[in-house]
Image (cartoon, rainbow, N blue to C red):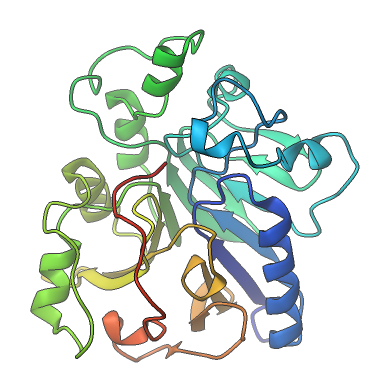
Length: 302
């Protein structure tokens, strides 16, 4: 019997734009001629119930708090969406459930660090970004704007948890692993492509990837699409990394993978359903969609 086919969509920083993301997933399902089975979001989901919540950044308070419609049952997410925390979340609501919880029908917070089996896939995850000053400090309850900001930083015990996981199909992280531009430079930069700063990302996430050796890594935070291969030396398996833009336009904010069993057989960007990569082909900047204009400033993660 052939292994079961699965369509998985990765989504970049949603920043509260739930309706928009759902319309993109509708379009992708129609284009592929099948339903999206599983949605994985890479943080900065911003599942706030109130638009003017003082914990939201000022730039976001002018936008509607779309998540309230899902939390109150006015709308229901059509497909199961699992997300990690970025550095901009309702951390007060997430604090007491570091192992994850369901926030609304089909909307699930995975937790701060660990691994879960979703639709037969082993999905590892590390929420937050790296802040060296707080890396070894205990996590405080987010009672103020300051402690809420600190809740968006991962800590040593969380990193140690994810370092111990094995046999990971997809690893979700918010901040890029350090060294992706250098790796892309080694693999060759196609004409018309520019590389971000060599200092983008953090070394802790890189260590996690190099230790866990996941088949795929999905990340966000820096609001730019990027694709590169890590590892693959000394007999160790290669890891394919896909960095996603924020949910501003689907071409670079949505990345989908079609699997047979636990193996990705093809993948693509956006909602057109067009395949940009098939198993056995190289993975790198050449699989990205054509540049569509200037990107937003990198590293903001606002």
